[in-house]
Image (cartoon, rainbow, N blue to C red):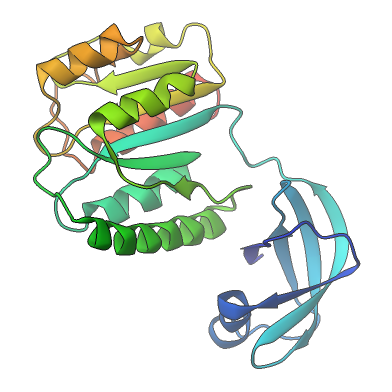
Length: 241
């Protein structure tokens, strides 16, 4: 069943989808009156709907039933991703949203080769947020994970202080995720480096500020592979796989 998100909570027995959602329903999916779709509201209510009418720029649906969306993990994971080269960030965002990440914070660390200016970053962020939305629709998430503004490494460390547990994945070694997450936290910040990984000084700074250095094993993973592996391990260890 097609999956969409509404900007507002739905209180009436009808709802109108417009813009890109309406275009997707009418032009791409070519749905017809009487077909079913699902809309998830900001308060994570899953609404089963039936198409009532379709025009060129809007789709009206009738609300058939409502229930709490149960598709979200019970741990809130923020990915702090050092910017990789080319379009690898697109892939990282798409797959991490599918795997259950709740928020993504791009950052620039010491070894980042990619260092876009503010104007370019603003355009990239807009594209990344759209990728996150599309991945959330495809994987039937209960939320659209936010892609935040890019931060420096120090800014990201300061930002993660609100999380119960912060983990920096380091190719030179660290503790196992299983050991770090023995007492399951509700909020986790995970730091992943770019192609060059992290400098020792960055890892030390993170640990000195309450974070934990973790390992993903003896093999060195590519920048676009590491966040998927790390997030999968976290989801498994917290009982969300």
